[in-house]
Length: 271
Length: 262
Image (cartoon, rainbow over all chains, first blue to last red; front, top):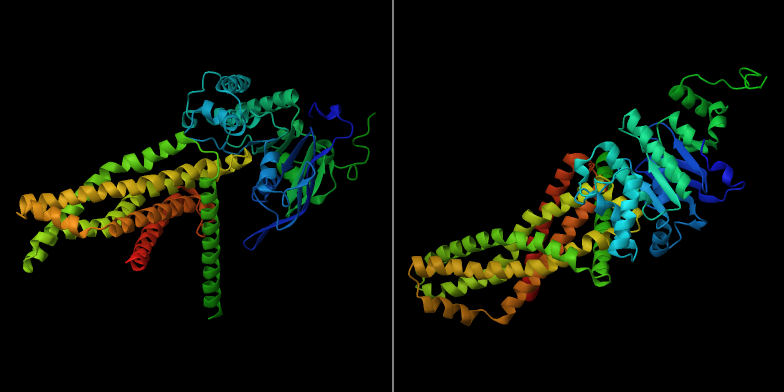
């Protein structure tokens, strides 16, 4: 469970999706998504492959516009604001893409420095110092002159995370942060995520398949199934939910570890 | 029957959608070209890629185009006893038509295909999404230097092609086949007027815009390709299409500009 939970008693809503519908071709991928992401907390979106989890993320980032419904980020409706206003909102975002999305013709240093060079007026010395700081935080110091193709999968993710955090964002999005990594590397990414979130206090939205490990880092877990969010709740409640789709998902991914109170009354009572 | 009509309608809608998308993309890129920031380094880097690195192929094709024009022109003009007009024939053919068209086709093959592949791979690997999420406009960051570089480089490459071609024609016509040196150049000076150079310049500018627009747009919208632009095969298919589309468009516009300006 995330250590930030106790910091705010009534967390603000950072991002809200209201009745979001999205159709690609003849396929209705999102069929009325309602979801709230609380500021300073970690919300994990889970679901089977191809359900549209990344599409939800793209809506939050303003990369895709909903056919119906609204996406509110810090109270602003992304579909009604100008490009300039959207870019101002995006200045508060950091994104770790599934494959890190590093610029392959740039070195590690240039990749991390890019947002600073393009979006701030900082001097070269300031940029160097900030990039070095983030690379050190990600245990990447000494790799700054390497190219992405020369890095391992785990290192690429760490560079991606360094780049995502270099502008000290308020919200960080993680799209399958541990896909393709072994258990050891996954744990390293989770450790860095936990450490940086403690340090910077950002809101995190994570799309992940890594169940149940990801539950330990989350404040809220939301299941996307049949084009809708079947429930967004703390992980303990999620694992005990009566919603048949959530139950099916939990049992498929974790095995029938938990039973509901309804099935076994008194199971969770403390003696 | 209904099925066939549905397919045709579907295809027409897709083409209209693509045309609209590409049209808006062109307008956005042109707006980016005109508005600040004006950064020299990325433009110089693209001039090196589109322009400087194409010089060898332009010198080579320019020389041989001029040489073959000299050869063919000489034997055709000799039938009418007008070998003295060879300089004029070579220069006019190159300046008005072959220079701009062949330069554009060479740049499409060398740099246009690379632009589509580069941007397409960036689209596939979410690098363009990453730019947008960092509040960096892909049109300003990626396309603007390419557009400016192409608009500056392609007319210059065309000029190089023309000059080298004229000397290629001279080499064959004067040095190998014995046309009078003075007649070759005098005929050229007498027949080439400013309007011919203007036509060549207009064509090379329009072709530069067409080449960089089509190459960039096909890469940028790779993910919206009907047959799927994903993976290495998708990039290769889209690059091929971009090359074909740009080449055909250049030839169509060549005719249109000639028809308007002649």
